[in-house]
Image 1 (cartoon, rainbow, N blue to C red):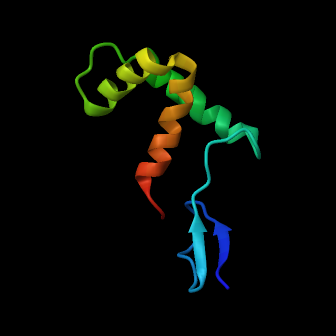
Image 2: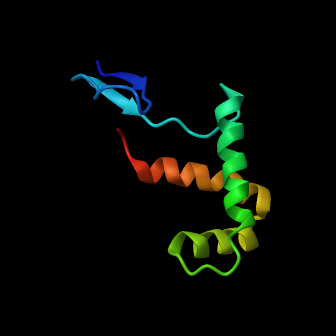
Length: 86
């Protein structure tokens, strides 16, 4: 039987037989880290302008497609997915 455990950046690598589960940026749980990530994303979106970096282009397209507030939640989610397990 394989167990699961949530991990964060302070955890050591998972022991054998334990599968790491990536936590999402969701409304359940501690609201303070979610608020900090979304406020940080709003600061990034405020200075976005016409930058030609790949992430900036993705954000501009996302704002047009999905709207400003959904994009403010999508960036922390994408960054946590790209960072991979620690």
